[in-house]
Length: 158
Image (tube, rainbow, N blue to C red; front, top):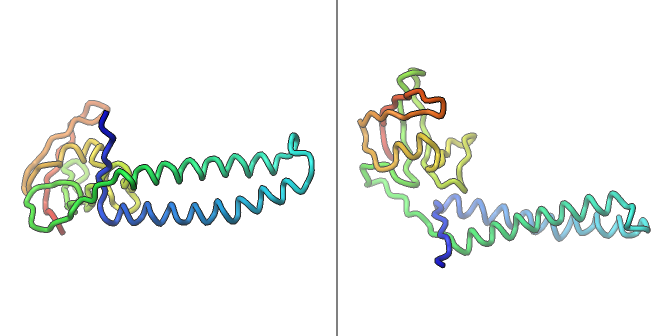
């Protein structure tokens, strides 16, 4: 069975590496100290501080392993300003006809999606609809509620 490949922008790859490094420092420092301090309190069977620290250690360790797996199986997307169609890593501007509003975002993989940073997942309804489209195209998207949303791609690779 082929292993999964995670397509990431260079920025997304670097962000995951930084998150992993921060978590490793936290795991080895702060959490390890909390576990050590909790052990010194005595009986571990009824020690909530110890249990809480061990649970947090497990969560952080799981996230580190998940990030390591993604990074080990990552394929960096080469962002290019020469493409005239929307693909992963493309920065674009769309116009929403219903809201009468323009929005700018970058189309990224689900692992990198973060709407607070205007990074839209390629697995989202809009992401799937704009992938492979060109500037000037008007696209109709059927929403989860069954309504039709119309958008126009105003610009690509801003």
